[in-house]
Image 1 (tube, one colour):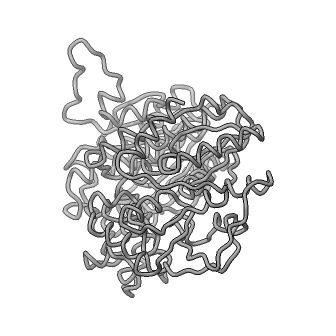
Image 2 (cartoon, rainbow, N blue to C red; image 1 turned 180 degrees about the horizontal axis):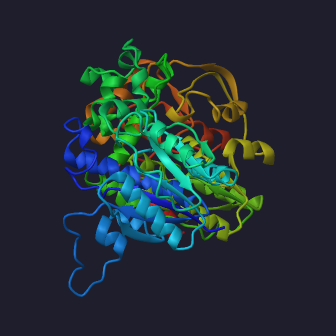
Length: 525
């Protein structure tokens, strides 16, 4: 059976799209938000075994090709966003006076192309997934039509198995009775109708706040009292939802979610905001290095099991990295050098992040890698649900190989890196090598100061976070090279990474230009 998904959308032009969100958002922000929603919906459609037909509203002027160049339809209509939509079967202008007539004609044209089962959806539903679309096709196998409702009384998806002229004449599109009115038309036409899950379309400030989850905020002040960033601006998580201009000032440390009685995740909210309006200008140096990672080296990675040290551990612990490489080679394990891509993802650059992940996955698959051994808690938590290849920590692998030594001290004042702080998943593996009392004096230290690349916007807060650790303990032990590097930069000389201690390697953390040069050398080895 030939399947198709009609994607109904406006072209995201500032001042002409998502206008009900103005003036809460600027015209440019509204267009950026709509572009992000198109990306999400298109990506969901790509997860189905169906052709995608994009039906767009006519613009006043479609950009002409440059002299001597022929632009593909998707770029001529959607600009740079069109590059992301190259997988569409075709791009067609919507025809007709009202929304019902435009949908009727789109279905008629699509069925005339030979498709036998067709879904139509808009681009105002960021929660839509490929699973919902696939389930909708399955539902249509046992009924004649499908209608999925929105929270405000409309619908976000309609599915048919033949063109119909008798179901589109509803009193008023855009009102809270559209779902009921359309359902009555379908049943009056004698069609067997099924319905899918209800989702929220994003049209207003209140919709946007609910999508972030900030509508659950009870203004208890717990988040503000535990976050230097929120405290500085005098806002809580609902206040953050209303300040997209502060998205890049959030350290994405997760402290707000840990203390919120309503489980609101401010870091997720900030990432969503960044995705809507990504800032590439302020992070040119980081993107130059990491998107894609310039110092990737896969030459020694053609093994079933390979070590993935990440980008920061080899930069700050080159001697330990060399020791690990030799140790793994003794056990028939390879090594590759790359960046997991978390910094790019956290900057809100979804397309670049997905391209980086696909590149890593493809290169591992080419080398028939079956297991990835990671050192960095950021790499571990970012990659474990994004790669098909199983991940293990270096601490698990050392125990399996019978390598490493117990580190004995009276006490270990442990600093938990942000991604591992809640469940301490990676620390449970580290703990096996530590013989002594585990203490937790750094619970009030919000972040090492590097989280979410927010230090670019908030250098004073970043400094204050790193220096606050010195007020808690003279010594600090952790298992994140990035944390160690920033604590050392801020003068905490007794900050130690436990992995070199487990391996019996003595190494001083370099600062200045040296870490960058260490990354470069790994490219050349």
